[in-house]
Length: 128
Image (cartoon, rainbow, N blue to C red; front, side, top):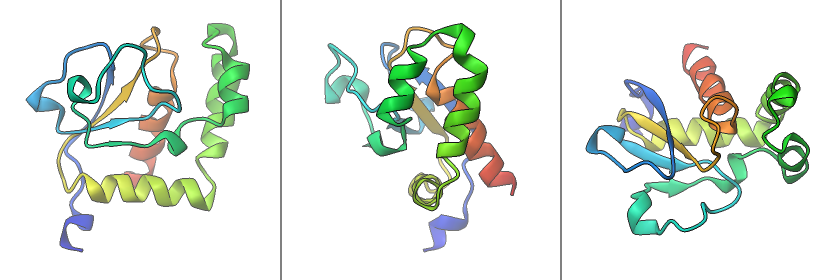
């Protein structure tokens, strides 16, 4: 796979309720739940990686409560360190074939959501 060695130029984060842009590159929905009121055509996704999202238990525990943010980050990063999740992240990087990657999420809070944590994990994987 020649494209597997090409790294994305950037990893962006974008809310599912913001319009897609050609600059988004390879758009991936990283929520376990489909964003309410959004169609597949509107989201313009390359793929939906629901299994890379936080576990159902972690998602429900977090509840997008900012006071739980630090603990959520630690717990989700730990979930992302399993062999299965590392394989998913590596596959995502390879599938993007060097294009920018945009992690699409549905949460209202742009600072306290799983895409922020996943971006950090992907960047670490690229650097390591």
